[in-house]
Length: 142
Image 1 (cartoon, rainbow, N blue to C red):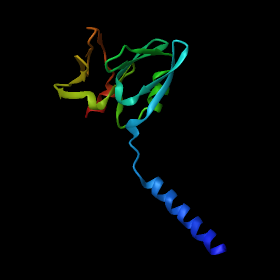
Image 2: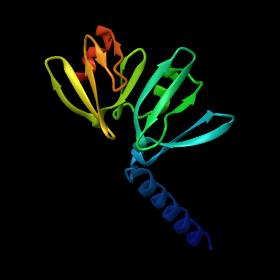
Image 3: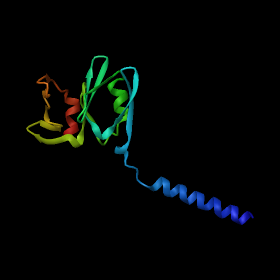
Image 4: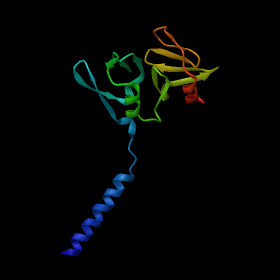
């Protein structure tokens, strides 16, 4: 009886090690935020970029309207995978696989139906708004 219990425990430990070794696709994860008095699930693959608006942040998604929520950029950035999302400005976080080109200190991001151009000294977004980008975040593209 003790040997059966021992082999069962060994098998359980081996199964646990296999579980820990299997790579998890972190990009299948989702993020939950409060928006309009409800908890909203955001799939990380759908995020195009995140924009800061004074006390709120606007999360721009593929094919749907942006989600307005309250947490700070720092808190959102902590929840996002650091290899997929980078902060390029104190007001913007971009998904790195959306970067199409970087030429003459200008990064162009592909978003649904539009292109989002980011110049490291200025950013021209699809709204036509220009924004100065701090040099401390310019190393993201180097």
